[in-house]
Image (cartoon, rainbow, N blue to C red; front, side, top):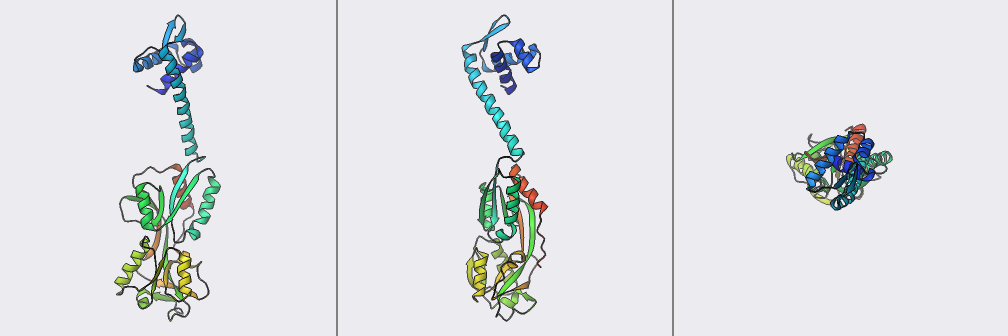
Length: 298
């Protein structure tokens, strides 16, 4: 059964004959007759009583007409909705953002996205990279901002690659220097992130390679709270430069960190490798490509 056969059948029933339907559909009468015959064959029952040049619906034809009209209407609505999606006049974007730095990096981008596509419904999840990866794999999210993954289950588009700075209490002996090496912080408590943050693993690995295990002074997923703890003299926190610049406050000094190359904040937007990306998701990735964030570290 094909939609064109249903459409031809409905036209014959509506106009009362094969000749009239052929004229309305701009095809030959023989083509109309053939399509109706093919539909009757596929359904296994006649749909019309032929009365010379006139036709009349059989009982089966009456039932099929009701269903065919409904199916054609739904088909047209489906095509219309798909067209809306392709032109971004409707749809949904399900995206995860890292807790760290979202207000700095993404507030302006989302404002621009909403300006361009006001009818797209945006569902946001703010989490650490590990939880975002899980949500993408489960299908809860279509896209997620995460540290660049090594898992081949993900495809990704790079977004930014930032060095880390140290935010340190102003009265700390290292606060006056131009830079700090990681091993110089061995005796200072580290303020760490929630365990769902991949950045924690990188920090711990770098510290161990520098010959020490950091003393934990506290954990949080909120950068501004961690910086408040720094101001209160509770330890130091390592933050991406683009984030750290906006969080310096009285009692806190930002110092460049000298660290291994892998100890960086390299955010990418990930999706399941091989998965279909909606037009709404593709539009978000296109916007990110327009406005890349460079790892200046200034």
